[in-house]
Length: 416
Image 1 (tube, rainbow, N blue to C red):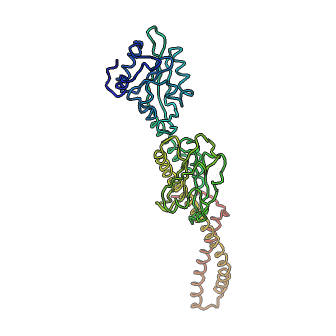
Image 2 (image 1 turned 90 degrees about the vertical axis):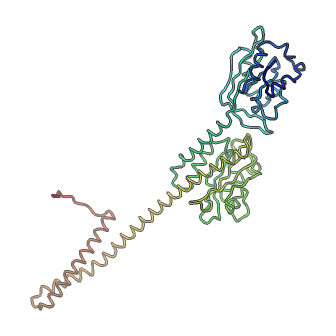
Image 3 (image 1 turned 180 degrees about the horizontal axis):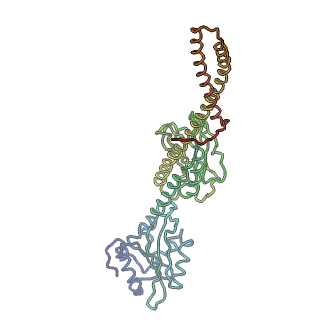
């Protein structure tokens, strides 16, 4: 009899084993007694499956793995009925191999869809099965040790998704491109994001345009490519999300998304519409609509979607700043070209009257009959007009250089 003092040790002693196919413990093989004592005293999750019907026995640490739907009713029942949702796809073949050959079987981080809290839950387990022999050495039971890795697996893949959002979208040159790249990343996150839609708002904030989607085979009727926020035809509550600046739960997501999910098993029943703030916390520049993972708690999915929205804020605003910088550079280039054209035209217009002014002054100065006072004044006028003509010629030359019409001639020079 077990000497452990935990809950399952007490239940083991109180349970009527004579009503099961393996009978009372005093008829069990020695190996079963030893295994029972070991698991009931262990702090690591462990369980037994005994006899031809694989009667189920587990310790205190194994209770959370089965959840409240199994504990304590599962004690003494056959494993196939206790773990019915994973018996065929996971357990049966491994149990058969271990019992027939005596070789251990197991997996690391295996996905197991379990019903533990009233819904089909996505879980990940690392486990190993070993054979228990009866007194004549024939395998007659299974010893299972296991540990749950659900949190580590899910957090790991979510962190990788956020890392890819930051790295893959960093090259985006526009908000549209950033949304398209983000949708491609989310499209591979099929469990955490069953579907997603990214709506970009125009500068006026009156219209939202679909800039990317994930997990969808084709746009459903409720997935309009452009939504007037004041029209009332707003199935995803974009106007409300934009005006309130906070996330809203879409409870009828399954009906809205219809048969257009590319991965329809299981269908998400709810979605979350989240605002993506603009630059420096301004009004939302985008709205993310994302389905909640129906196999995980809603609060867990919501936290992840909020992190996705935060990353989208960074990549979209960064892309828009790049776009504004490129546009500003184009505007400055156009302004510079207009300035060059203006100087070129003005220089041409000034050069003609200056030429007409310089030549008559030169002709008058060559007249020997010109008195000294007039000669001095005309000399001053000639020098000034010459300097002005030189300046105009320099402007013309500068315009030709900027327009790429000037040919440079290189000659050796003694710089010293």
